[in-house]
Image (cartoon, rainbow, N blue to C red; front, side):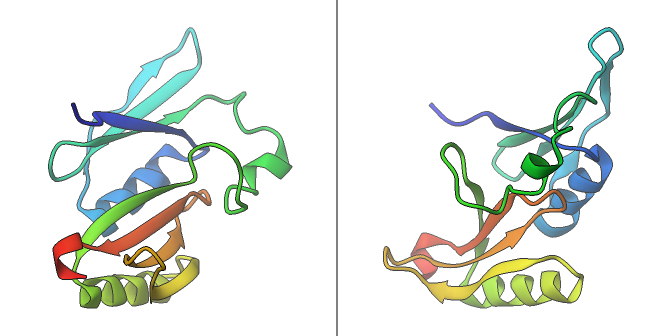
Length: 137
């Protein structure tokens, strides 16, 4: 078995999809719209076939406090991790994202469990780990 896709609710589908296309090479698929449910989504496919479903519905995320608190630790899914290559690749991409105005909430480091990683926030505040591949740690 493999994880086929993970879904996230967002306010701005196009902005979020562009982030995953630009920094992680995701292929953004056409917009799906269900007017009866006021639901829209796009899939983003990554190398290896895993997909991210980026979804929007106007009644989701109206609470201003919850929509700005994604970066705070909480129960449930907490981050996506992208293996970006070597330690140097983690450093390079983290620096590029920082220069592009992406918020870096964890500078590159080796964690206690041996991962070399950094942590950034996507345009809607979701935590994204940038990790060296396991054979290059």
